[in-house]
Length: 134
Image (cartoon, rainbow, N blue to C red; front, side, top):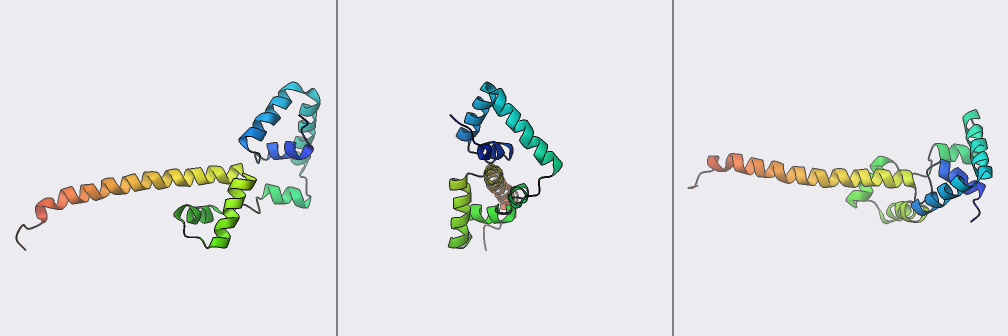
């Protein structure tokens, strides 16, 4: 399999799918030439590449904010915005945003469990305060 410079850049940006990342890593293990290309790319980045594409990727300008991802998790976005985030997550497969999404979903599950426990504690603690005769 031939690894393109774009794939190497995506690899360094952590912007590839798991399958693509595994392919690039396998190719890097087997090719000194490819490892040299990665060193050159890293050197360019360390010098501060200032192309429009580099700035766009570095600052994640197409990535939704964490707040927007939270609204996505809650299902409260308008359809167009939801469709864009679906595209960004499912088609582009942005690893950064997928990690944020997973974190938000985990927090939501934990919050739901915590809320149920808290409500049960309130109920248990107030049972004796309720009068049997209104």
